[in-house]
Image 1 (cartoon, rainbow, N blue to C red):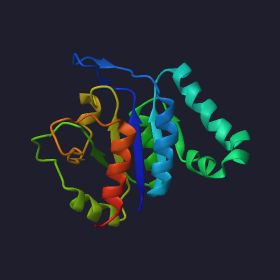
Image 2: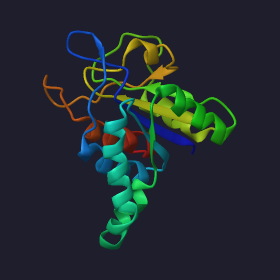
Image 3: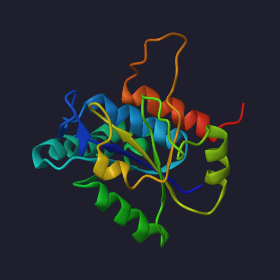
Image 4: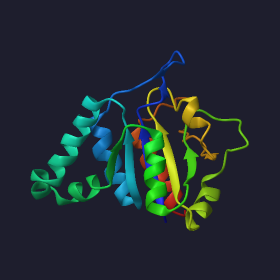
Length: 185
């Protein structure tokens, strides 16, 4: 399985539909790296164009790969899959360099999409069994902006709860989606 994931802090929308940059959330780094490592993600990319924001993530990564490694080697192993990039294009280029071909790009959203590109989790499980690299895109803010949306090959259905309320944290959705893609039940 050649599975990669990316958390976009840019380009994403705010609630007014404007393209913005969101801030890094420290808990996302730890939790998403641990879930990614658990479910076989090769690299968990974080896209953040602001240098000072990337420095926050770099400092956390460095801590867990040095001093923190003695305290909790599992977290150190998980955080090793984190890669920081300035743009989505850099992520794709990195995967192409590693795998020798373009990844299949899969989008996620909390909103239902009436789109021909929508595929089931079961169909994506079949895609993951192939030899092609797969990149799953997770957004922050109010969703992935059009410049990246246009590059997405397929969309996964949103994670639904038992009622009308639908507001999971991205790290919760990430873990659920990875579980559903890598496990048969």
